[in-house]
Image 1 (cartoon, rainbow, N blue to C red):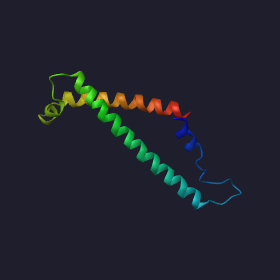
Image 2: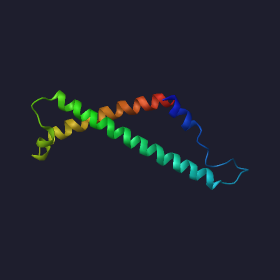
Image 3: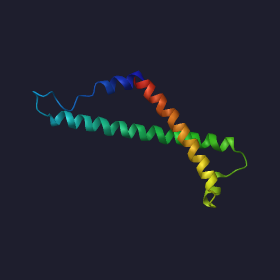
Image 4: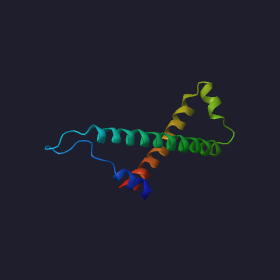
Length: 100
């Protein structure tokens, strides 16, 4: 994680000081950094969410969650949402802790 933090720390400030003019090259580099990290974040969330759903299925034996949701069982959907939200908040806390 320190490698990722060092890469992020090297991002260039997009706007100069009051005596400098705005450098569009720096802005473009930062936009590319932002898009890259957004893609990395989406990939990590997809990976963690799929693992979390497998763990949820293991924790609820004899219950087909997807089938229950298709049958209109809102309670299962809310429990799955709460589980995913809690996993996402833990991952976010870990990533924020690693970054600073």
